[in-house]
Length: 80
Image 1 (cartoon, rainbow, N blue to C red):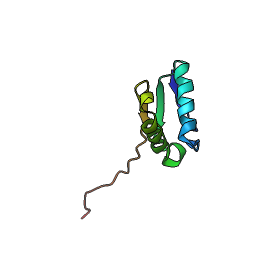
Image 2 (image 1 turned 180 degrees about the vertical axis):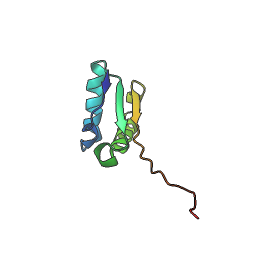
Image 3 (image 1 turned 60 degrees about the vertical axis):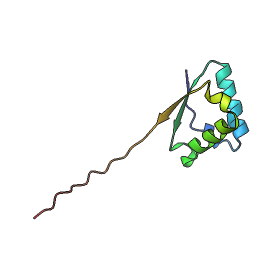
């Protein structure tokens, strides 16, 4: 099972995130989806701060990182 909650990182306190992670782990959910764009680009920082406070959580989790890339095709050829 995977916990992929866009709102998880909107919680203001690491204690709230810690509690939610523990609830998921208690239910057998060990995979957590995280992306750089979640919560206005603050989700990774909040998750990292939570794991710094409670590193034992990280030992029980698999963190899946979602990355969205945008590419702009630029021609390097000069016309002429």
